[in-house]
Amino acid sequence: MTDIKILSEPLNTEACTRWVMTPDSGGINVFIGTVRNATKGKPVVRLDFEAYVPMALKEMQKIADEAFTRWPLNKILIHHRVGSLSVLDIPVIIAVSAAHRAAAFEACRYIIDTLKQTVPIWKKEVFEDGEIWVAAHP
Image (tube, rainbow, N blue to C red; front, side, top):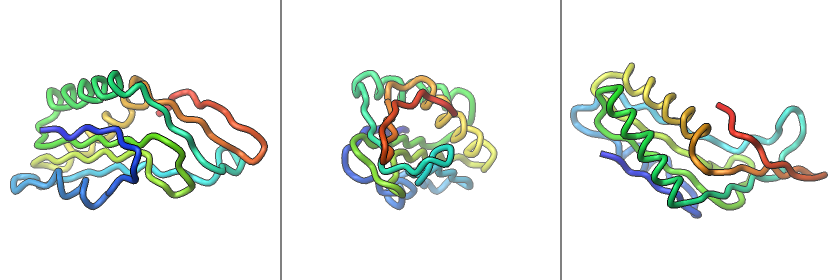
C-alpha cells in the first residue's frame, strides 16, 4: 500500500509515521529531508521547489513499486513539498514499514536516492547574493 503526494502545504511527520504503522510492522524507517542553512559554506535564504506533478507522481509510484519487489514491505509513503521553503522546513518525507528493520532501512534509502535522481522535481537554492538551480544528487 502506498501514499504518494506532492503538496504545497507543510508536511506532517507524525501523521506520515502513523500512516505506515501496521500491527505486523516491527520496523519503521522515516527519512525527513530538511532545508539546511548553508551550502558549501554559503548561507541559504530559502529553497524553491518546482515539479512536473503528473510525471513526478508517476515516477514516485514506479519507485515504490520497485521497492515492493526488492524488499518485503508493508507500506510506503512518499510526500514531497513544492513552493518556497525556509531553513528547517521539510521538503520531503519517506516512510517505510516492514516486518523487520533491515528491509525498512534499505528500502527507505533506495527510495530517497532514486527519487533525487529520477523524479522531475527541481530545487533552486536562494542566497543573499543570488540563486542557482541545483542538479540532482544523492
